[in-house]
Image (cartoon, rainbow, N blue to C red; front, side, top):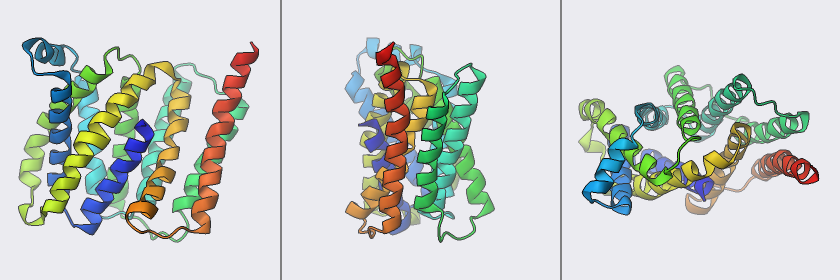
Length: 276
């Protein structure tokens, strides 16, 4: 469910920024604010719950979330969807795998092969035919990818995922408020963009990230990285279903490579555990 929410987030963002030309600062602020409101309503507004939000706040996670949302939105001003997905998830993968190795996780050769197999599927999906990326957009998307990897890594020790996600959204909204107020362009804020930002924040981001934080303590860093490789494929499928993007042979090959690589690596690991 979390991975589907991530993919839905990409489709909603693409619709808002590309199809309806929504201001990225407005989209980012509305996305975080609506996510914070939705999560607070779920948690409850009692004094006890509000105190719990403060106790569960993590400034590092909130800053990571804010940087990711801003970098993601502004990068897509100059990057097309394909190269943006490649840069974002390459940065996420490299960051998380580097941290896993630093912390002593030692993926087996089969897991490395599965990871490379899945990563090659993303390259097949987005690399052919793309134009040279904008340097500014490229840097922003790399920063967004590193920030999302950091947000994911910080969620591994979370014991109350719903409260933690709610507090992260509240404080991330506060963090982005000032820069977004200076960058807002209300002339580029159609009602469709507002609606998409609210859906992105309340459902695809808020609920999706809470589910992701609930899952993270139960999987390894390597597996968390591997699973996220499916998101560009799911997002591309969402583009086919909801934005009328054509189905190509390249898309089908990419799906097979990514899903096979993930199943190969994770399935092998489970098989080894069952044999022990």
